[in-house]
Image 1 (cartoon, rainbow, N blue to C red):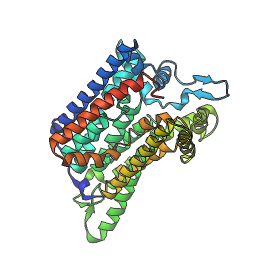
Image 2: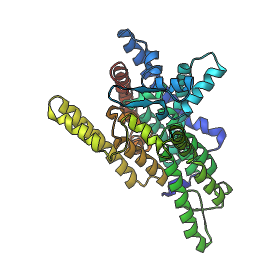
Image 3: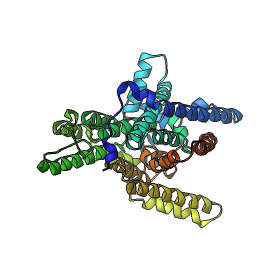
Image 4: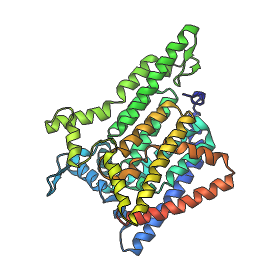
Length: 402
C-alpha cells in the first residue's frame, strides 16, 4: 500500500470536468475505430453494425435476454454449449432497454456497451488520477482505448460493462467507500465469472485496512481506508468495511449457486457448464501447448514468438506495477484477471480481450507517457490509435473475436 492512496477524491461537481479530457480523447479514439470498421466492412460488403451486435457472445447474450436461460446447443462431439455460461447482468440490461424503447435486444446491447465503455474510461481515469495524478489518468484511458482489441469495447459484449463496474469498485475501495465498493463488486460478479477478481480486491484491501487499524491503535492513531494513518472517517468505519466485504461476493456466488441448483449439480454446477464449452482452469498447461505448437512450422513460428512476447510483456508490466508499489487492490485485481485469462484451458484467441479488464497493467506505461513531453506522448498515442483502428477493423471482418 502507498501513501498515494490517501489523496482525497475531487468534489463531485468537478469530477466530470476533471475527467473531460480523458473522456473526449477516449470518444475520439473509439470514433476512429468505428469509422475504420465501417469503411473496411463496406469495402467487403459487410454490415459493421451486424459485426458489432450479432456475432459470437453477442448472439448468446441476446438469446438470454429474449428466451431466458435453458437454451443449449449439442455438438456432434458430445459437447454441450449452454447459455448458463453467460452471466445475467448484460442480458438484463438489454431487456430493460428493449422494454423502455423501440430498440431490439441487440440494439440494447450496443447501447449498453457504448455507455458502459464511457463509464469504464471514467472509472479508469478516476483510479489512475487518484493514485498518480490527472495526466497519468488521461494517458491510462487513452492506452486502454488504443488496445489492439479495443473494438470489443464497442461491441455488444460484457467486457466494457465489467470493466466499468470493476474500475468504480476499485475507486470506491481506494477512497474508503466500502458499501459502494461492495455493491459495485456484486454487480461486477453478475457480469462475468472473473468478478471473483473484484471480490478478492475488496477483501484484500479491507483485511489490510483492518490490520493497519490494529497496528495504529496502540499509538492512538486511526487508520484510513488506504491502511495509512489519517483522521477518522465514518464512511470507512469497520462496520461499513465489513458490509462491503459481505456484499461484494453476492453477485458471482449467487449466480453460480443458482446455476448449480438449476442443473442439479450442486454448488460446483457452473464448472460443469463451463466444461461443456471445454473451458476450465488448468494452470496454463493447454495454452502453453498451444503456443509450443506454433513453433513446429514457419510462418506460424512468428505467431508463436508474438504470443511469447505478449505474455512476457504482460508479466513484466505486472512486475513493474509491483515494484512501483501500486495499491494492493489494483495488484490483486489485475493479477487475478491475468491469471484467469492466461490459465484458462480453451479459447486461446480470446485471451487478449479477456485481459482487457486488467487495466492496472497499463499504469506503468501511463506514467511513462505522462512524464514524457506532451508532443511525444501525442505522437505515440496517435500512432497506436490508428494502428488499433485498422487492426480492429481487419480482425472483426476476419476470424475475431471468438
